[in-house]
Length: 355
Image 1 (tube, rainbow, N blue to C red):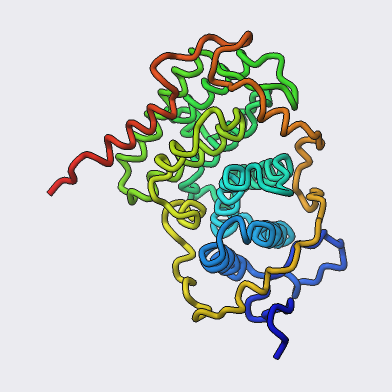
Image 2 (cartoon, helix red, strand yellow; image 1 turned 180 degrees about the vertical axis):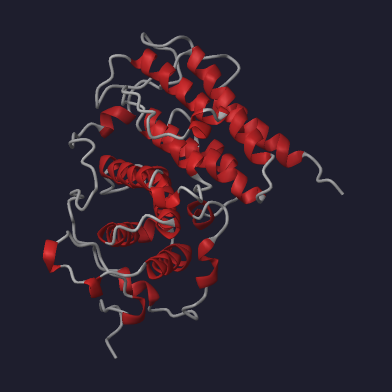
């Protein structure tokens, strides 16, 4: 038995690392089938993240989820299991933009890039003919994230968005908010500051109300109804800076969800693997070593969406986007849209449940 505190691999818990594609060197036996890839995510999120913590496992889980996505790509899998797994990975990356913000060695741009790659894959999956007879139920959610994270892109591309999504009130409000930000922030570059004027704030307030109303009337659980508003808040904080929304507001919007429930869309897919290790104290040793720096190069169908620029620190220490400045109108005196969201959330929580 190895001496204590010595790095060692726990083979029952080892997970395939990400490796750049090697063309014809990739053997079919090296690729995990879809149902195994789903179980891999169940283990990564439901066991490792839940037991060891998001920040503590972030580097390992990020690398292994990228490996999962790569295995789907190599097999040209685009059906329901691939969609579900990519949706969970996308939520993981959105959460990372908030949870890992300001931590040592966290590269915001690289994380944003991986989120964009995952959302791009989802867009392609959603429009694939294989899913024509069974439209993915979460498409609106991830179309919204895509519209927001690409807010700097002033080219409109609606040709691949289904009409029912284009006409959805939430998607229309996101598009209006996006246009308002672009108009106020013009000219927009990769490193310029994003700002919102009073009109944009009003639109965003409508969006917040639509998110809360639309989700609260859903037949899904209360946990599920909180996920999308929280992840939208994470993206907005990433885009406009921490002055936009403070941690107290973020926690209120989160509504008591743990990070795994958020990643799983409120319905914890990974709950089945909780405790499977029977309290194995060596479980964490499978990821205690440092993950090799892969440079986040884009391979096997991943789009190179932006070239790297070291602008994140400047971008997030700028004048608050939701306050008065030369490029924006005075901030509304009624408070931010996130404050309104917090108030609405508290009012909903205070309402007595029907008997």
